[in-house]
Amino acid sequence: MPLLANAPLQTSEPPTVQASPMQPADGYLLGVNDEVEVTIYGSGQNQVVRTRIKEDGTITLPFLGTVAARDRTARQLAAQITEQLRSGGIFTKPSVNVEITQFVSNSITMFGQVATPGVYPIDRPLTVAMAVARAGGGQANGADYVILRRRGDDVEHRISFDKLTGEWSTATPIQSGDILFVPTAPVVFVYGQVNAPGSFTIRSGMTLRQVIARAGGPTLAGTQRRISIYRGDQEIKRVDLNSTVQPNDTIFVHERFL
Image (cartoon, rainbow, N blue to C red; front, side, top):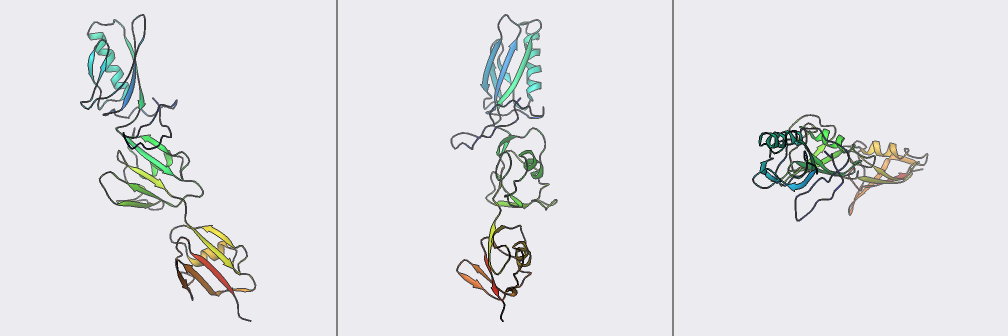
């Protein structure tokens, strides 16, 4: 049973996880629109059927007709089909294999600055932290938070990676259909009398003092007492070094008075 594939969201039909050689845990419960491949061994020629689970939770198979599939794992469905073939006298010693080829009904989408973005099946209880870890974790240029969008909820929930408890935290349980996005880390620009001017990624709550330190601190000609921040169309003077910087701030360290 394949674990995941990096598949884009579709607009005309539900997102799916395509087949891959990796195997998920045997906890994924089949649902409507999931696709399964059923192989029946027991006759001179194997019977292979690839089919989607219908709205009523069933699939149609040769020899058996309609078979209930919803709310079963692939292993449970294979055992059920095997027993129906045996008890119906169709085969004496049937053997059945079921693979999930597309995960649709119970999946989440993870994209942005993570190692392996894609659509992932929910084959076990997951939290936000576990979902990000399953996608390989955040990348070096990623923000220190993830945005969670939940079906039926118009609010985009920003969850900091260092918030470990609470209603919207890394411990929040994931639900089917959730979309998680790790954006690129915001940057600020530091120029003037600093030892290493340039652009720098920032973390939530980073102060002006911390940013100046990342830029190598003031040069011998510069001073922390004369710093201007250009924010949009504003120029902010006499800035507190402990104030929080904002994305896209341009920070200029002036020369000291002689």
